[in-house]
Image 1 (cartoon, helix red, strand yellow):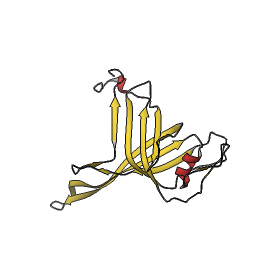
Image 2 (cartoon, rainbow, N blue to C red):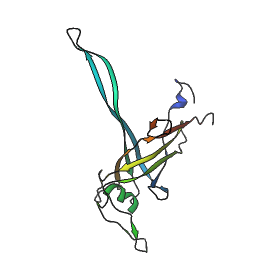
Image 3 (cartoon, helix red, strand yellow):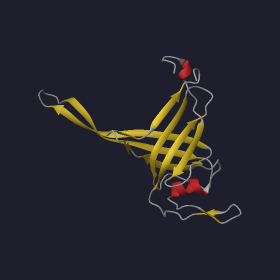
Image 4 (cartoon, one colour):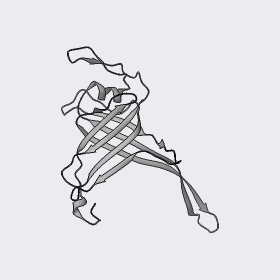
Length: 177
């Protein structure tokens, strides 16, 4: 990877998002216009009382979370089921799939993003434990291309050495790959 500052590090992200349901088979989610991760957490702050105005002298993290937001552009039964808390879609033949809405309160699995951009560094993201809950928006009436907003969270994985994390990101410098 080029050391900053270097305009070769500017990236236009493109890629493929794969979902694997718990106990299931990995599938390509199709065209997705958004794959966002938003880290958050809480801190416990300590303020000194030794002077006229309290001043923060220590701040420690007490929790960590990683929210996920996906905008899927392909209207499939599998993508809709993730957003609507649906059970596993059942094929009725002739291209017809049916699922029950709000049957599941959460759907667990893993996500994998594979970078395929031509401009800038490529990113590969692996989130081995994710949970999707019913939510987000879906509007079947529109003058625009339909979209399915799928929201969830990555869950931390505990390792045998006592550490934990939410997954991995691999950055590949295309100029030196």
